Image (cartoon, rainbow, N blue to C red; front, side, top):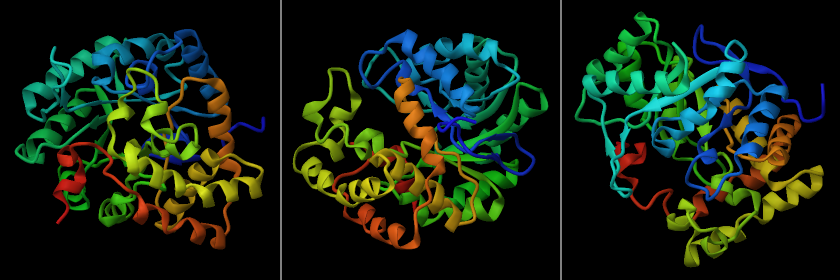
Length: 338
């Protein structure tokens, strides 16, 4: 075991697959974070598996299908070694600004066939509803997803950005293995209801953006430092006075990193792991990266243990963050919290 190999495995839901306690988000390999060195990204996929990462996360929206196609050769080479997760539910068109939500039966049927084809596989291990349309009953959407399990096209079901009440409602239709939502030192909305519901039902939690889209690493301090084509340039938290105020919140993270001989990113990832332990919740953060060096940094974080006093030092950060997670929060669970 190398220093950068992650420690341990967790079960995704009751009777779900065992996966390494840290996964890999593949979104940035195809879109949203500027230009990608494809050779380096492919090397990162291989390096992740070598270090005990077995949950690989994509979605049909990432690059409008290109991300699924990009990871398909890796999937084919390691099909029995990995847990493959993808998502449906956000609709894109030729209009680059358009985002719609589709949870209807016909769309789900169309989406799963497209993902299976692009991924080059006959079964998806974990199939998420990327966003929930409240106008479509879970009996229809999750019911259709359950049919995919019965037909052998999908093994386990997941949801993303739902409230605790919505998770319980969906679970009553069919067991849910994992809930994926944003959760980090900068984003703790899920602790309002979703975390408790997941713990109660035995649903694993898969935090996306556990590094606050890179802001928690200290790699950039404002949108002005980002490259062309980086979607973070349009996020409220990284612009103007918000960015300046939020950068100042990283000081305790930096102090703890120095004390542990670690990086701010590693402290942020360790916090997510230990915060989940407080809630007696299985957790698999999926930090995204395209570089082996960052992957090594991230996986090494699973060895860090923060003391109660150190966790208390980090506790106030989220309440002081300036700006929303997205310019339009209507697509998130926050908009539907009671």
